[in-house]
Amino acid sequence: MDVSIRGAGTVNVPTNTKKGKNRHNAQPWEQSLLAIAVSQSAITLTDLPLSRASFAPTGFAPFDP
Image 1 (cartoon, one colour):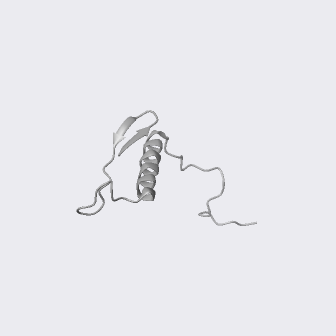
Image 2 (cartoon, helix red, strand yellow; image 1 turned 90 degrees about the vertical axis):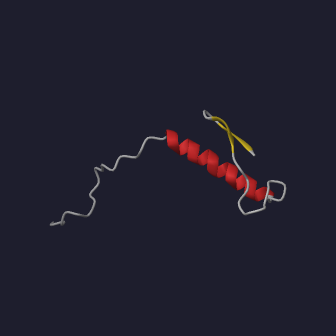
Image 3 (cartoon, one colour; image 1 turned 120 degrees about the vertical axis):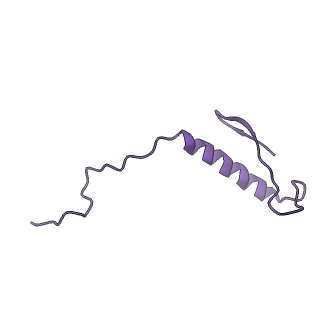
């Protein structure tokens, strides 16, 4: 199955999940879930990692009123 990913071109994704199973026997939802997973993983590769810094209290320091 060819999956088109924005910015990454076309990726050939095998649909074989079990021995002897081919794309003609695969359920439609299996192929669509695989396509969604491939596109989401390609999108997350381009995202910057979130910063772990925070201005809000994190609960490590005791609060003394």
